Length: 87
Image (cartoon, helix red, strand yellow):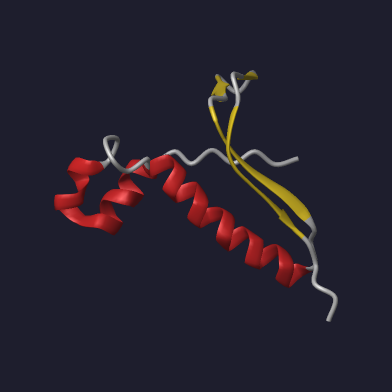
């Protein structure tokens, strides 16, 4: 199992939407969810290319605590199953 924590979501969104849009981060735009959605799309394409079937789940809530344990409440934001197409 892999866990990927995006640690600079606000900065990524700031670069993508510019200084004017920066004011929307956290109010209208959920930076973390948007970056995770884009990352999931890229991972799905890469997994299919390498023949990997997987379940990718974007969740809100868990936090890594000092490399010791994962603290949870858990709210699923998005889930996608990657299957290989029969060609």
